[in-house]
Length: 276
Image 1 (spheres, one colour):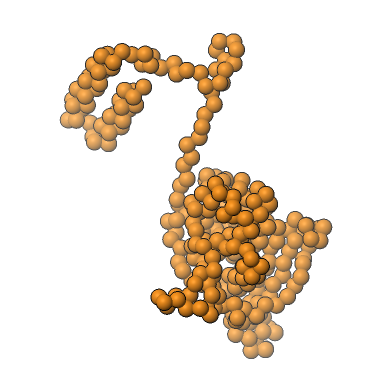
Image 2 (cartoon, rainbow, N blue to C red):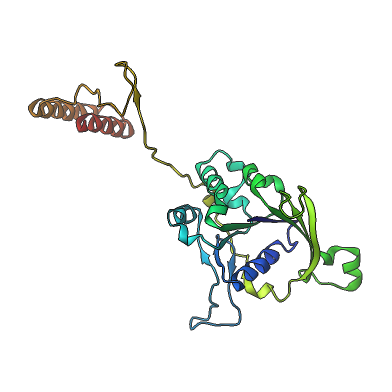
């Protein structure tokens, strides 16, 4: 299940997500949290004065690595507060977004869920929008005419309207589900969403070294992964040593003629040739 919580700043999105995270934990489920959001038990104080965490803190890299061990994700909720910091629409073409989308498509097979909060629907990667099952619109009732008349304080009572994005429950896409009000005062001590997230984290780049299958059709019968056609493949060792000495002399002459950056590039290229 992929569940989103949307609303303006201070609408109670993080509190609503924490509430459902706690329900999941109470039923025996696990929890992963991304930077900027933590869930803990305020009723227990450790020797260091902190409260025990109820979820494991991970980042995007650890999340991807966890797919190598499916047991780590079974019956686990992955909660991302302000998801645009990690999985935003502005990073649509990045390898991180592409990988998370592919893994999310297999979410049902692995039996894990994703919870996220966001202020604008357009900030989310469009592929994740299509994968979202439920979207809860959050609103702080203290800002409404009724809330002001009742003397509600900010962050006390929030209005939640959930929509069935895919129609799994109602049979109709984007049909409204249960509408209820949530008193978040008892929940506020169970989470922390005030930690800052380094903006540079969103510029982290993932590079994948891909395996290659070469189909050689030059000899009539197609064959995969033909032998290297490099002319240096069968070079005798004595000739190779002479070539390496020549390369060393070339680099020595270039030291006084080119800048260090270019010299390093030439040196790397020659090492690749010698390694063949």
